[in-house]
Length: 187
Image 1 (cartoon, rainbow, N blue to C red):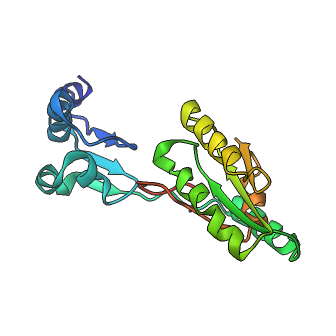
Image 2 (cartoon, helix red, strand yellow; image 1 turned 90 degrees about the vertical axis):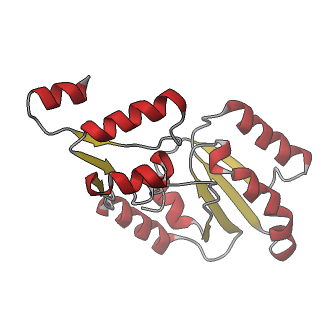
């Protein structure tokens, strides 16, 4: 309806696309109609139109797509650098992953690799930072850690406001997502 109203009032319509699944069925038709009516379609990554709409529609409406990568917050970057300069060089190897605890973020892959990491560095801490978006998945991860005797090496920190400081104090950052557009944590 917004698209038709924009056409009727001769106003441009900008469609800002977030993270969406590939369109199918009725949504496919709605997306096609939206693409026809939109003046511009804004995404966070160049690959998003192909992933969401498919290669054919991406080519048909290519002139409408504009990728605008979100910028880097200098204040957060400075907090990371400060924490890095203040970190202790002795102690366990600090490994961190940041993201919603959810199957798409694939924290289980990191947890499955811990035994091999421990073989090389028995002093290792894995920190999983992020809200539990999928409670069942989070519970399965916690059971996985407990059942393999890895509790002494893994911390589930949940949502944190001090992510830049945690990143700066870490030795290794791991992003094991199954799919990402423009990962917020990388920026």
